[in-house]
Amino acid sequence: MIGAIRILLVLASVAISTPSHAHDALPIALSLDQTGPSDYSLRARFPPAIPEMMRPQLDVAAPCKTVGRKAAIIQVRCPGERPPSAVTLAWPGAAGNAPVLLRVSYANGQSATLVSPPGAGRLELPGRQTRASVFAGYFSAGLDHIFGGADHLLFLVCLVLIARRPKRIAWTVTGFTLGHALTISLATLGLLLVDSGVVEVLIALSIVFVAAEVARGPGNSMSWRMPVLVAALFGLLHGLGFAGALREIGLPTGEVPLSLTAFNLGIEAGQLIFVVGLVLAAALARVLVGRFFSQPATRWQQPGLAAWPIGIVASLWFFERLHSL
Image (tube, rainbow, N blue to C red; front, side, top):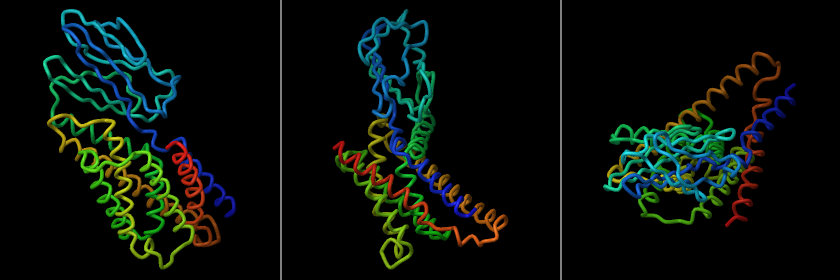
């Protein structure tokens, strides 16, 4: 029975580590620009993770009408010089986990940005954008991105397996947080420019490194002696990956500090939820095994069991991303 549990744990680790889920939470970027008193141009840019057959059909709400389509550009006309009230998305199947970003630009120079959760079918055009709506939108985008980035989550799994004790886990995750919050801010503001393809390759390599440390077990390496420092250093790298998503979303003019803070807080909230869930799941598993099996929990509770599939999948990501450079 214990052998069966081990097999199930390995299969579960492989299932949540499938390469198709790595970094597929880049947003669907829509832009609506006023080109005349009654005319608008709606453009769409889809992330590579969404194949063409799974992309939604875009339209505008009545009384505005679509008067022309050319590639990813839709020409819109509205009666009475009234702006469109909403943009609609008709999904052909599963919506996926990509958030939807809508930027609106009017002829009088006014603009607004709307960030919507994945799977949105209707985007109401924002009127007067408030600070609260900006904060909520970018917080949600950060939350969506952390849960949509399997590579970042698997790195967190390895950090938890190295830190082990609750207090040590808290400090280690805090180090990771401080590291990536710094580089998210610097890169998004244009103060730190790094090739995003190279960053993705190095992120995959960082997961291979920590997974190998977990598989080897406790020792005298820096990862085991000073996990907070190692987490902070790798956090600097992962922050560049988060910044790539935020650059895709863009920052609203006049609300850069607020939106940047909200995005960071969204990522941290997602990390906290994920890590607390891991710790609770491990505690529950320990109780259940101790209650229903005669062997003590230490017989099957081996961190290396999860490290191997995580390391293998991260290695596949590494070579796949390296090939795409």
